[in-house]
Amino acid sequence: MVQDLIDLCKKRGPKVYVQTHNFPDPDAIGSAFGLAKLLEHFGIEPTLCYAGRIDKLSTSRMLDEFGVKIYSYDEIKDDMKEIDPIICVDSQKNGGNILDFIGDEVACIDHHPTFVEETYLYKDVRITGACATLITGYYMELGITPTENVASALLYGLKMDTMQFSRGVTDLDIAALRFLFPLHNKAKITRLEQNTMAFRDLKAYGAAIEHIQVYERFGFTVVPFACPDALIATLADFILALDEVEVVVVISVREDGLKFSVRSEIEQVHAGYLIRDALSGLGNAGGHASMAGGFVSMQNIEPMGAYYDAALRERFMDVLVKMGYLQA
Image (cartoon, rainbow, N blue to C red; front, top):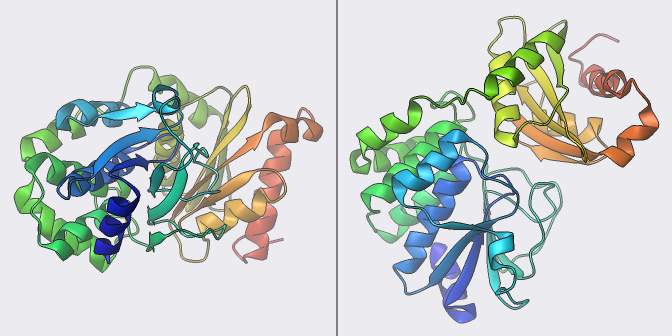
């Protein structure tokens, strides 16, 4: 029950930190914002925070559209103490995409599978299309009507993480949609859904297209320069839209390592298990059945030599063979 979380925050607070994953997307922002406003209703003082960057156009625009205040770790780390409670939202400790802050992670609210078990004083991990669905459920459970901005932010996060309700949708997501739809601001959502691509993104699209390789119905491509996390995920969705592709791996080359995004539109291939097994012993990885991500540091890539991309492709294909998806 969400009342347990509220009681925990009152006991440990009133100041709490709400931490998203390192590169927060619309679902992470909307969920954190919705949770923060709910906690404020009970006299709790939440601070939204993250490590990394907000590097997706749609995400940065929603901060202004809904009046969301969120701080980077560099802005708050001098004020944070070891005893300060942290609520992990849309992420889990040791999930490979969240920095371990100074404070105490007492709670976790997430819709991704758990790959590394951790203990929290409050834990709500359920497989849904979006984390925003879980936060919306709290409002429904408590009989509280969210403000127009909160409802709109939650609905936008829900729509984005489910690709307009076409990916990973559960009954809970539909219930959240029914609850939020009459409360949201249609004009604000429309503005956010228009002009979501920046000019600089075109180069990444071109590189992904130029380097794509397709084996049976498995697509694999490498973008030989750094891309924001959100853009890599968008590229994976873009390639998955090809009629000839059912499973796709996109890699972006960065100075410190390789960032991966994986997509699958078939039940036979669980994207989270695929990348977990393919990168076993190399780096961090995890995710849903339909989408997942990971990272491998450059020091683990260098032993593979100049043709590391081929070696990585073979690792993914070997796992797909074991899954029975590709022929040996």
